[in-house]
Image 1 (cartoon, rainbow, N blue to C red):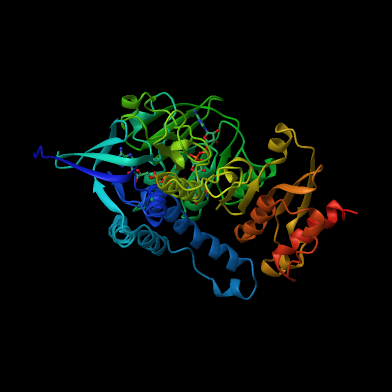
Image 2 (cartoon, rainbow, N blue to C red):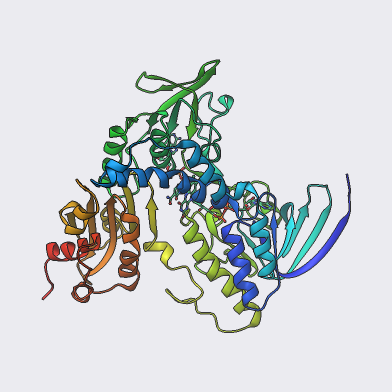
Length: 477
Ligand SMILES: Cc1cc2nc3c(=O)[nH]c(=O)nc-3n(C[C@H](O)[C@H](O)[C@H](O)COP(=O)(O)OP(=O)(O)OC[C@H]3O[C@@H](n4cnc5c(N)ncnc54)[C@H](O)[C@@H]3O)c2cc1C
Ligand SMILES: NC(=O)c1ccc[n+]([C@@H]2O[C@H](COP(=O)([O-])OP(=O)(O)OC[C@H]3O[C@@H](n4cnc5c(N)ncnc54)[C@H](O)[C@@H]3O)[C@@H](O)[C@H]2O)c1
């Protein structure tokens, strides 16, 4: 094993080469800085290989088949079942067969240096990288270090769980064969999306959630998804704790607080995330290892003028698009501060991630889909807004009935009565994901409702639900 010690200096060191780290480096390089990314696994990170891309590739075929079956004419043409082998092959290509060569090429073309190995902060503006061959490189940053090390699946403290080698989202999204049966612990986004996919693949799925489903969202979202999962054959057990998990030769046995015993070939744990900060040298600069990293809206860590963090590791909004949004702010502000040019850090300025607070969009790719942005009614009330809630059945819109026979879905608009602007929107229904950006623009731009009446949705599209929501609210005088 080599013990070679090298050193190098860059304007910016980015620890972690996921989608977020790549974007921080890219913006900083476009702003005239030199940047190196330190990555110890695959450039592209969780989203590319074990999260967004493979999971959505698994779910898309399921959605297309359902859509075809809901439209006479097309339904008659679809006589077979889902070809799971072909679904997995398509998933493989979306995960680039777990090779990061394409992303490495992109880094080269963007002028970003790459150093492979485990990076640890070892002092002010200093990161020491241990390569797989044991070599050590000490990197020094002229201006900034940004942490973008992401998050890992959280394994809750359930008796026996770690001993049974449970699946996390990584095993679920990279499956090579489909299990006959699967128990899922959790009721959030991963649990519901994976229950949707595996049920469609023919797996006998039991989902055990200690609460209702998707509890941070509007209540009807989780209720409609639970109803749909049950209709797809999933056993959905709500408000129930998992107390013990064991494994024998036939599979796993999951025991619940209300005395049930669920046997399955595998168990998937989908109970949230934990920050990847346990072994990145935070203690060397006076921060707590294993904790989420707090930042201000320019992604600067309080108490430092050179340390930034972005993406999952900040626990602001664990979504790729929000992490990349933070990365754009961080990369741009690092370049601006290095050049001594003006920093625009007032709310909604160039160098801040203001939308993290009250305007986060998210699509949950269950069947039906959930597309949501901004505040739920409950969250808006907690924040002291004077709230009015407007609901509308999407199936009553002409465009929805053309799209699918028996289309059912619900839309909710949360209005700030004082300013008469939209604080939040939730759509639940087939194919609602593509409705979301209009809602995001309305929330971020704080478009007054009387002006929104002039944004005419095309007939007959599902977007006409906007007109129905406005009509239900009543035209402001
Ligand atoms: C199953 C699943 C599905 C998801 N689906 C979606 C979705 O549809 N849409 C969406 O917006 N979000 C989705 N997410 C969330 C999304 O995956 C994350 O928000 C996103 O990947 C976070 O990006 P990141 O760059 O912060 O972290 P990561 O992608 O985790 O990247 C961090 C990188 O840092 C590297 N690293 C860590 N420590 C070190 C170290 N010490 N030295 C060197 N390198 C290091 C890691 O190897 C990794 O490559 C999903 C998550 C899961 C689990
Ligand atoms: N489509 C998407 O955008 C998408 C898809 C998947 C994941 N993600 C992101 O990945 C992150 C992780 O997803 P997730 O589903 O793991 O987390 P989550 O926060 O969505 O859900 C966690 C679930 O686990 C339950 N839970 C937590 N601790 C538990 C315990 N000790 N015992 C039993 N249950 C427990 C919670 O009640 C909740 O139902 C999310 O924050 C999400 O933003 C996004």
